[in-house]
Amino acid sequence: MTQQPDQTPIPLPRARVTVKDVAARAGVSTAAVSQALNGRGALSADTRQRILDAATELGYSPDRYAAALRRGRTLSIGYVASPPLDPVREATQAQYAMRQLSALVDAAAAHHFTVTVIPYARPELLRSARVDAVYAPDARESDPLLAIAAAQSIPVITNDLPLPPDAGMWIRTGYEDAATAALDLLAASGATNIGLLTGEPGLPRLEIGESVYQQWCASRGQAPIVARVDAASL
Image 1 (cartoon, rainbow, N blue to C red):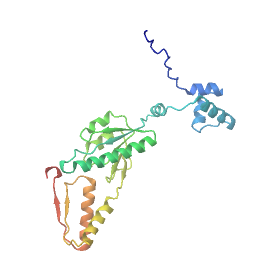
Image 2 (image 1 turned 135 degrees about the vertical axis):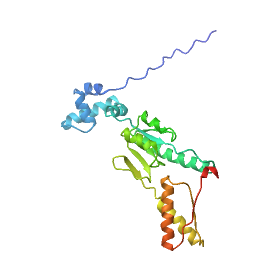
Image 3 (image 1 turned 45 degrees about the vertical axis):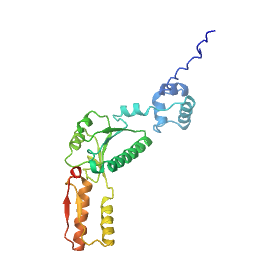
Image 4 (image 1 turned 90 degrees about the horizontal axis):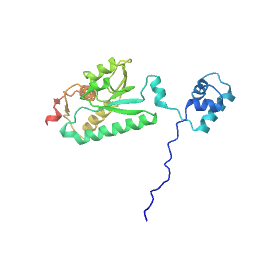
C-alpha cells in the first residue's frame, strides 16, 4: 500500500495591511489616517479614535523603512571597524571592538535602525553605503573617511576627536580621568620615576594620554620621559 503524501494545504502569507485598508475601514481618507497615526492634524477626537481603532482591528503596523526612505533616510548607522589589529594586543583589541559593535547594534535596534560595517581600510565604501550617520570611534584628523563623509553630508560620530558642529558630534570617553588615575596609582604605590610608553601621534586617545602625562609631570616638577613605539613591530 502506497502512502499518500500529506495533502494539507500550506497557508499563504497574509497580505500586509495598508493605510488604504485602514482608511476604508474607518471611512476616512489616507491623509486622515496618516495624521491620526502620527498625532498630527486637526482631526476631531472621535475621528482620530475611530482611525486608531480600525488600525488595531486590522493589525496595521507602519512600514518604518518605507516611510524613512520617503524622507530621505535609511534607518542604518555606519560603523567603521578599527585599523588593522596589532599582533601584540590582537585578542584584547578584538574583544574591545566586539563589545563596542555589540553595544551599537543593541542601541540601534532599540530605535529600529540597522548597522552597516565599513572597513577602516576601505573608506571609499562610504560613498555607496546607505547610512544616516557613521560612527568612527578611532578616527584621526587625517582619515580620508572624514572628508568623504563631509562631501556626502553624512554626520560623523567620533571618540575624543573634536568635530565642527556641522560635521557631526564627538564623544568624550573619559580617557583623561583614566590616565590621571593610573598615574596617581603608580605614584601612590611608591614609583618615583614614571615614564610614558605610547604610540605615534594621530590617535586621539594616545594624544590625550600624552597631554595628561605632560601636565601631570609639570604639576609635580618631574621631567617627562616619553618613549614612542610601533606596537606592531614589538
